[in-house]
Length: 237
Image 1 (cartoon, rainbow, N blue to C red):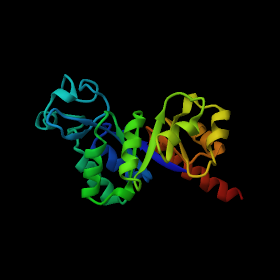
Image 2: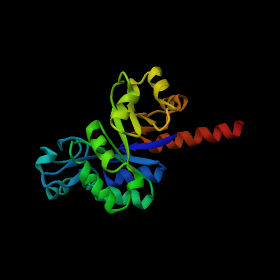
Image 3: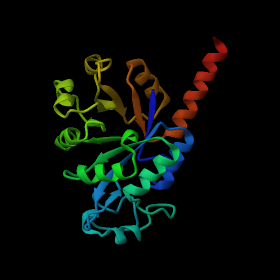
Image 4: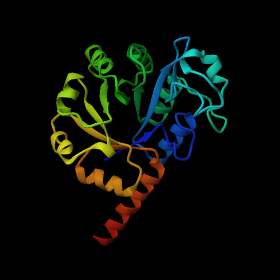
């Protein structure tokens, strides 16, 4: 069972910052998920919302700001909004995986270029709600792992992932059904991750479903509790 830190260790650190990524990897997360958007000067930055108010001391739309303007903002605890290149450097230092969520159509080519520049093709998973972007990317770079994100259970989840030529389904935990799990888990060539799983009870449910991983806001606590439970099981065995 792989643990993916949702926007880094966002339960304790400012989300989508280098600080949050470092913290998640230090806690033992297998991967960190981050969100990508374009600046007005076409640079890739790590931020979830299309506006600045919730996560920074700025205001307005991300796409209306230059990289320099965005870098001048405080993203929490003195952190700056990172560029994609910074996030890739963090993943390379820890030799861990980054899940890169494309928040806008058409950014897949620039993302692919930056990933290739640092040789991390085998250390990224590119995910999105924009399934056409994933299909386009997969056709050009079949070696890159990709994942479709779904917030509701489709009639035919396997058809959806196959149409996108993806390797992974990222499914919303609160919306999944037993039928969905039975359809997807164990299907050859397809991995299933559930988001967002934040309690040990939900983690245990995910384990019982047989999924490949979970995405969590609180990787440090979840990993710590999971290790403690495993130690207790070992002692009682």
